[in-house]
Length: 220
Image (cartoon, rainbow, N blue to C red; front, side, top):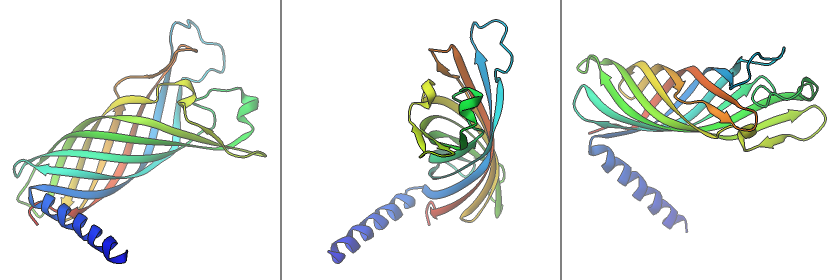
């Protein structure tokens, strides 16, 4: 059994290395930042006192994998799959009563994202290569976990009635040295996540710092 497992892992590693030889780079990345949200009340007229229009996260952190396909020394195609945790102010998405909110001591949102785009290297012959890239993609609300003061955690999978999948776009600037790269990325939702029963929608935007490490380098 151990021999079969070893051969299986060896086959995967060999395949990935051969894939990298074909001008592909494969790596992992970590990110940390913050998000801000704007809530729209459709056809409500004047809002009653206390209704929330803008709110931030405490933080957003995540991890993922990326694949970069070299087109020429200056240009490459880029794809990413990532997972994020977002520590929220309690009940901001749900906008429940303040009495209910006082029972919640912690709220974490779990999301996944898939995006793809183009990266341009400003100085491709330098040891430290500067780059900018732009991507479009979709993020999915996986679950929200709310911790109540005296009860078990409450897990919500339907995004409190809002759309679970929304499109977004990103713009990134960064620098790359050998296998390591660091960057700053701005993200913006392209459409609001809407909740039909209340006539509301939420648009998100965020800024994250990212560190990436190439496991396999193109042509290496």
